[in-house]
Amino acid sequence: MHSAHVPFGPSSRLHRAAFWLLTVLLSLALLVHSALIQISNFPMTPVKLDLQPLLDRYVSPYFAQNWSFFAPTPLDHSLSMVTRGEYLSPDGTKMQTGWVNVSDPLFTAVGRNRFTPLGMISLMLSNTVVDFKNQLSGKQDATFKRNGVTYIRSVVPASVDPLDAQVMNRTGMAVLKAAHPDYRFSRVQVGIVDDTYPRFTRRNDPTAKHTASFFAVEWQPAPDVKGFCCVQVDRAVLPGRTK
Image 1 (cartoon, rainbow, N blue to C red):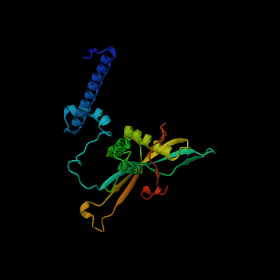
Image 2: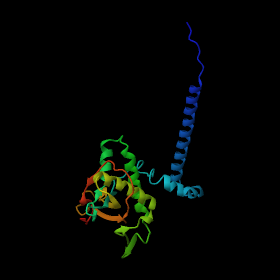
Image 3: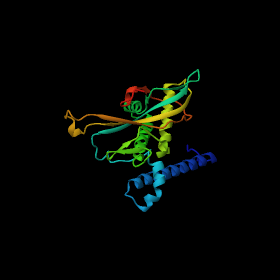
Image 4: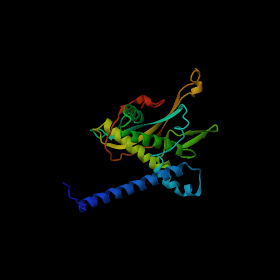
């Protein structure tokens, strides 16, 4: 007994068309993504120069590339982000929270579960913080010189890198709302802790010390975001600061 041949109906043809359309779109998106990543790693060329604004918005801070994967070296330098918020108390007084560590709890969560979607947030935040600090170089409103050495000011304007500052503000506000869900925040401030460790070759040198510095970004209006994830209130994260 032979089964009758049933031709594809309109519904089947629609599903097949949708499948192939989705395949083509995803392939094009992957192709564009790969091309932008490759161009960002090329030496400076006229094409790369023309595409630099697009590369800055897409590749950095979300997909920044480096050579550490191919030639890893022990870390001697790290950046982490902290945040605090301003809110109104029940009697209308302006109050400030303590500093909340944003980076370290995210790294801890990703370390415990490599498949957590927080990995993308952690990577985005790390690249954003590094990119923001790099943008401070040579900016007179963010740095000053003393005895021929350039230093970062204790408070820098968000205008030196508004896109990265916006990402940091929104991430910081989300963590603050998770830490203090009952507060109505009006402003948010983020800070960057810069830790420098002895080189691996000096690991046994008693004179080689860990040093840390800190700078904050000026206060910004609190963005409307939802609280999420990892919270660690830690006032000791700020070198030389207690409040």
